[in-house]
Image (cartoon, rainbow, N blue to C red; front, side, top):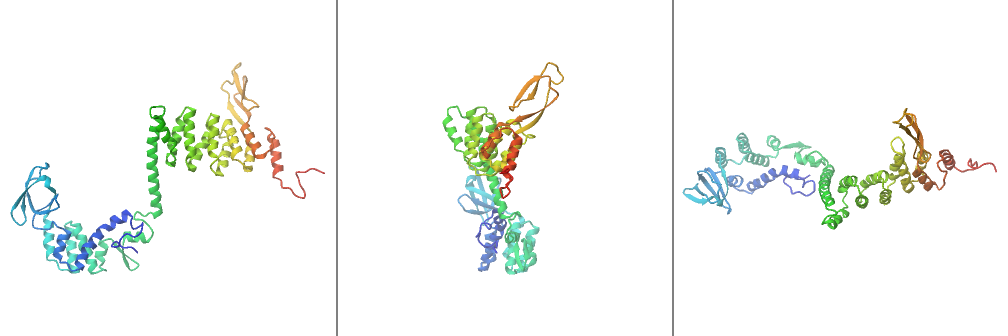
Length: 433
C-alpha cells in the first residue's frame, strides 16, 4: 500500500488531491530525516524556520541573499527609494527598494519558538509538549513538524497520529488518502472511473462552447471577403462537440445552399448523435432534395434502430399526413419485414378537423379527398372526419414486400396473414387441388 512518504508510482497516486494532502507530511519527513542522520536540533531551527532569530525582520534580496535585522521606517513602493536595515550582528546597511524581494516580520511567538527550539531535548515528551505550545500560538507548520517527530520516535503515539489525520485500520496507521486509495476511491469519494468521466464531460463542454462561438463567426463570414477560408473551416469540422451548434444553425437557415452545407457537415461527423437531426430533416424539411440528402447521409450508419425511429412517426395521433408519408419513404430504404404491419396500418389514416365556417350557408368548407389532400365544398359540418391516403407509405410497402395492393388496407392485411402462415402438409394458403 502506498504511503505519503513514498514516490507516486501509479496514476491514482499522482492524483492532485492526494498530492496536496500528502505534501505537508512529505516536507516534514524530509526535515526529520536530517535528525535521523544526526543533525543538531539547532540546525533544524534554521532549516524549518530561517526567520527564527532575535531580530525583527528577515530581508530576502533579489540576488538570493538574506539579511537578518530590522528595517528602519516604512518601505516605499518605488524601486529607487532608499531602505536602511539595522543588522542583527550590529551595524547598518543601505539599499534601494528594488534590491529587496521580500521582508518577513518575526513575531514575538516566533522568537520565543526559536528560543525553545534551541534547547529542546530530542524526546517524545519534549516534542509533543512543544507541538502543543505551537498549536496554542498558531504556529501550525512548526506544530506539525514536532508531531511528525513524535511519531518517528514513537510510531504508536495515538494522540500524535490522530492529530496528523491517521486512523488505525487493520492494525496499521493510515492517512485518509491512503484509506481512500486502498478502497479504490479518490479523496472526493468518487471511483477513479467516475472522475475520468467528469473530466471528459468538462472537456467536451469546453469544446461545445468553442464551436458555439467559432461556427457562428465562420457562418457570418460566408459570402464576404473571406468566404472560401471560412467555408473550408466549416466543411472540415468533424468533432461531435459541434453537433448541437450545427443543428441550431441549420434550423435558422432559409436557403437551400446553406441548409445543404450543414447537412453535409452533419453527415460527415462520425457520431450516432447526428442521426436524430438527420431524421428530423428527412421528415420535416419541405425541400425534397434536402430530405433525400439526409436519407443518403443516414445510409452509412449501420443502425437497426433507424427503422424503429421512422416507424414511430407513422402514428396519425402525433404526426401529419406529410410526415407519415415521408416516414414511409424512409422505411423503403431502412425498413424490413418488421415494419410491414405498421406500414399497413398507416397506409390510410383518419383525421378529424374543425370547420371554422360551420353553419355559414354559402361558405366553402374543407373535406378530405381520396387522393390524400383536401377538397372543398359548400357548408360543411363543424367537425369533419375523413380518410387520407399516404402515398409514401405505399412506396415503403411495395419496396419491402415486392407486392402491390394499392391503398386497400383489407387486401394488404389478407396478404399479411397469408404471408405469415407457415407452409406445411396442410398449407392453409392453398385452395383445393
